[in-house]
Amino acid sequence: MTSLFISNERDETIEKYLCDSLESDVHYYNYSQFQEFESMLEIADCIILSTHLSESEFKKIKKHINDTSKLYFFNTNYFASGNIPYDPQKLLFGYNEYRFIDKIQIPIAEHCNLNCNRCYHFSNLQNQEKFYDFEIFKSDLKCLKDFGFEINEIRFLGGEPLLSDELFDFIKFASSIFPYTNMKIITNGVKLINFSDEYLNKIKDSKAIISISVYPPVMKYIDSIESKLINKNIPYEIFRVGNVFNKILMEEENKNFVSTAEECEKCIMIYNGVVTRCAPSIFINIFNEKLDCNFPEEEFDRVYDFDSRREMLQYLDSPFELCHYCMGDSDPIGYEWERTDSKRLVKKDYIR
Ligand code: SF4
Ligand code: SF4
Image (cartoon, rainbow, N blue to C red; front, side):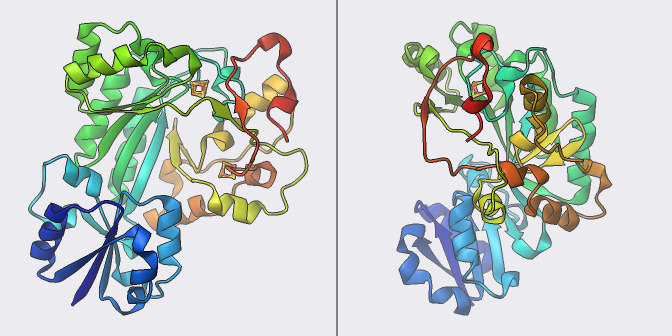
């Protein structure tokens, strides 16, 4: 049996684990060697893709595989945490089983404390406090578990997730239901500027990774935030590139909406009982209301409305109503960060 393991970072421990678990030779390829392994995709018996690959890298490889029954995902992130289960079935997921979801977004708070103009989640336009209901969250997540899904990463975000007093309850519950899943808090870092030791301990105990998108108001504090996270041994990542925004909506219908929706970095989101493929589609009602527009608002299917996990993933693969008027990630013009000024809130800041 010939097995390929494709990732973008070599890790010999993983290769050994896969060889031992599958009782087969496993040949490692870096994704950048695409031309070298392209011809092997058809003849290999088993193709294992690291969950470190991006959606677009995955799509490019999949195009070359006719028999998808030999395609698997390997949960590299969880393996890296050091808690390696003996049973490879815990970390290997067959593509045809419709069992694996790379990441799920959980918008704990619709509102935000930074209010960036052109925010994709329209959190800058939400001037009331609105949170994901914890009881609904529990039943949404149980429903995904009952379907038999395994999830690589759950991302708690917003708006700003640190505005929720229940954040750590959400993470604790999610970890109990999905123990092999990475938990990540995606924050703008504002609340971290003056965080207490007690709060740091809560972050550490949650075992979640802190991911900070740094916008200009937080820039001068980031070194001090970072050193506190290091001192507490809290895993973190920092993106210092978050000062450019794009327009996402279009006045006229996007003739290429199918390809825009295919190329857009789809990230499944669940929120108060419904499931969607992106934040703009679920929060467009806030935009319509604030700026007196009529962009399509989806009739979302509820998490428990689906008969099978296959049906749910197929629903999420098809374009939504808003995709007809959306540029996804394709607007080439970047705008410098600015705070929303409610006195000069204008549609043209969002619509191309
Ligand atoms: S920090 Fe993020 S969620 Fe908050 S307004 Fe800015 S882009 Fe939106
Ligand atoms: S509306 Fe469609 S194209 Fe726009 S971000 Fe969502 S999924 Fe992507």
